[in-house]
Image (cartoon, rainbow, N blue to C red; front, side, top):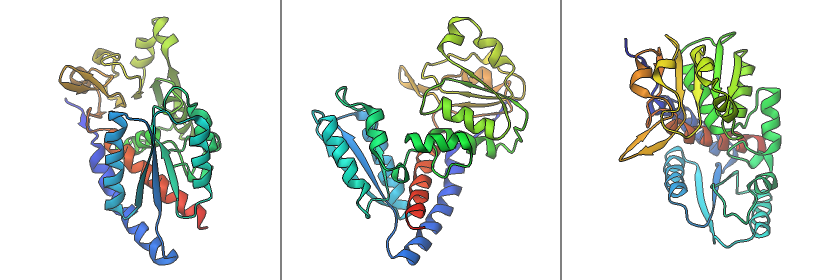
Length: 286
């Protein structure tokens, strides 16, 4: 029996209806609504597509949006000083730094320069720390999207075997903490797991599997446990197709729920970004 598809757009649309209504109420209460500033340094076609998506959804929700572009030759000091000014600008509710940054700029220093209550991606060290404590108001977007997809599957993950493949700061590590908060028995796999040849055995016992590596087909469909929930964060171009990190066709015959690529996690991630913008605004006006 084929797995049920977890479509990010359907979930995102429901959340956006709630966010739009909330933004309207906040505008009535405070006279001005939330505003997101997207900071782009240099030219990057992938981030340009993401910026367009941000602008479109922000407009639909009634959230102000501004793109501030800097030359690719800009110095780290210049970018940090611009961020510090926005920290004190009451019209700016939240910021997002488009990645990757040019090699002369340390991304971690730039993120740390932001006020944690204006960090739309939830990547500031203070916000990441709050993920450890649980109940973070502003949390990393992609992990938050994964948790919304699990919620949509209507499965209580308490005590279940959850396996995260990939341990990046932006997805794997915060996601593992979010799963632990829900009392899933959580395993994190990474490059060393693969080099040891142990990845299949970990994946095979996963009742909830989230893969965020960025390597097409790294997880074989035959490894998937019968009835598992599979969330594929990977986005890879293979020829003229976009595919995930999991062998979709084979996996979908074994899983109970699975995200397609594209159409799964992606559409929901930018909605989580906008939810963070609204939360940032509420914190600043509390």
